[in-house]
Length: 180
Image (cartoon, rainbow, N blue to C red; front, side):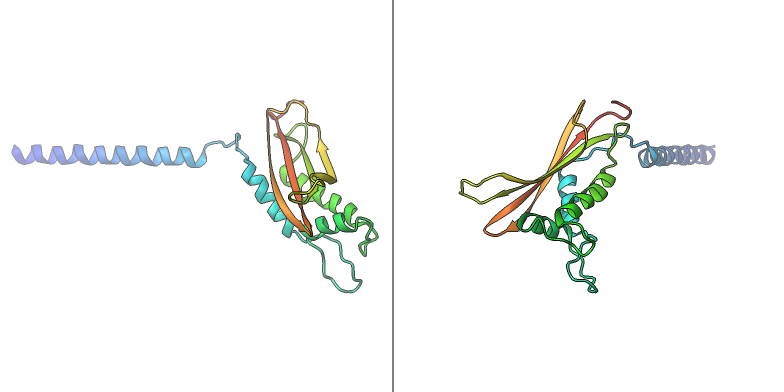
């Protein structure tokens, strides 16, 4: 009888181990496949987006027959220093910058009144540290309306523009889906 009792104990122990492992797997699967509708976007994410935009290759080049296209950072600098300069495609650098911002940032953030991100505003200001010519707005573009924002977040990047710098600020209006 002692042998039979030992076998029963081993069977009960084995069943308990199976139940515990199954519960762990179910908890893991729950966290792996749970709905993530409330994704949280942070200001750090917006700063990363601006850094990616700085390296984005635009459709502006200044030399015909030489496909040396400008980056987002190049267009920001050119729009500040020579806003009337034309790209080979016939648009000014500021027009191409505005179009590229709407294409890249607007689509990345999925801006719309029926979406989670309702609006964005991108402002470029020139400043010289210790100078009276601080925070002079050089470029401003916006998509959507900053109405009924449940949260606002943003990011920034700095582009060198001798003797000062250009501060690129991105502000985003977040609301509930379907909220007008």
